Amino acid sequence: MATETEAASEGGLVFHPLDQFIPTSLFGNGAVHWYTPSNLTLWLAILVLAVVGVFVLGSRGRGIVPSRMQSVGELMYGFVYKMIEDVTGKDAVKYFPYIMTLFVFVLFANYLALLPMSYSPTSMIAITAVLGFGVFIAITVLGFVKHGAAFLGLFWMKDAPGFLRPIIAIIEVISYFVRPVSLSIRLAGNITAGHVVIKVFAGFAALTLASPAAILGIVAIYGLEILVAGIQAYVFTILTCVYLKDALHPAH
Amino acid sequence: MATDTHETVASACLDSHGGAIGMPQLCGEWIPHQIFWLLVALAATFFVMSRIALPRIAAVLAERSGTITNDLAAAEELKSKAAEAEAAYDKALVDARAQAQQIVAEAKAEIQAELDVELAKADAQIAEKAAESETAIAEIRDGAVKSVTEVAKATAKELVAAMGGTADAKTITAAVSARMKG
Image (cartoon, rainbow over all chains, first blue to last red; front, top):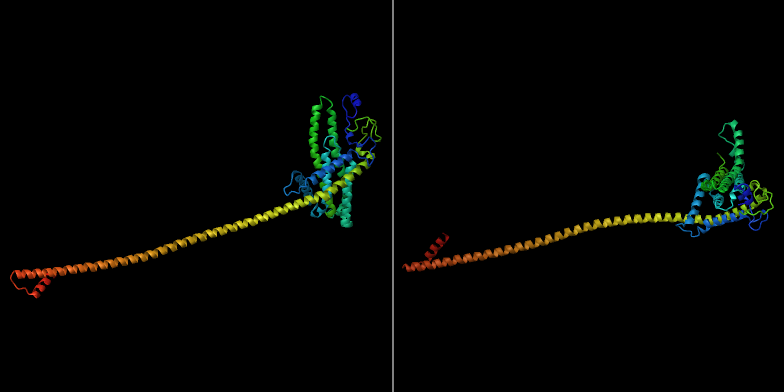
């Protein structure tokens, strides 16, 4: 691992759980500029290739009776499609490609990050923030384009007693603007935490006495992370659907 | 990890050993890098999904549901056809049975008629034969009676002659006739 000399001086226990998030240049050891192909680039490329593999190569047979890969793709397609229909409504089906792209991107990023030696794009707060704020801005713009000023009715509870309405409106506005923050921090936080915990357990594995427990701990956390990876992709997508519903049908 | 060696990458977020200072995710130096490659990857994913994968899967799903609907309709049609065929078969069976009964009845009637004709013919023949026989018997009986009468007359004449009388033919005939009736 990182520093053998330090390891010797610290008695075998080395914790660098955050080093796994450092982007490094793929070619040469230079600094990582915005255009530099890095390990992040590599794993995003692998992600795109995996998406192509499942959804394009998998469905190239176009079988009435699907092959295995095709039925995986069809399963995700049906899952997201039904989610949009159920949560957002039938008129939101035209936004299906965008939501499907988000879901597939987050899901594949989360699961590929669970491979050993991989790099985790969804643990980058900048990346999840782009996703979250992208969703937020797109939905807000869509709401104003569709409903104009009536979109602001989203914050004005007509059912509430008169004197409560301004207070509720303030709370609603705050909660509305917190949405992208919670979306992005939830995703990045969950994925980062899982990876860091695994690294910390791996650090304890250097102690002979603690290693069985540490390895068991890694296995357990890894199992948990497999759940978290799927659930976070699901949560991100379903919240996008819920927010989209507000934009399409702002009346409560 | 790639940061194994002690190279010094020029970065504000790395210490002299290449380890992270703070959270690498929060290092402003790398954020443009992350956003740039994210946008590239997102665009690529969106292109692949919206242009190739999703239309294809939608087409496959539509085709499948179409095929299933068609197959169900075809199965329904075949089922109704089978029901029709069964009804036709049942009808044919009933018809055939009725026809068979009719044929049996006709044959019976025909046989009965023929039998009646033959019986009548046979009866007539029997009656004819019986009548013939009766006349023959009557003839024979008549002949026999005549013969007996004649024999009796002749005998009586001879007897009368033998006894020395002259036989009057008329008397003898009357006597014999009276006796024969006897």
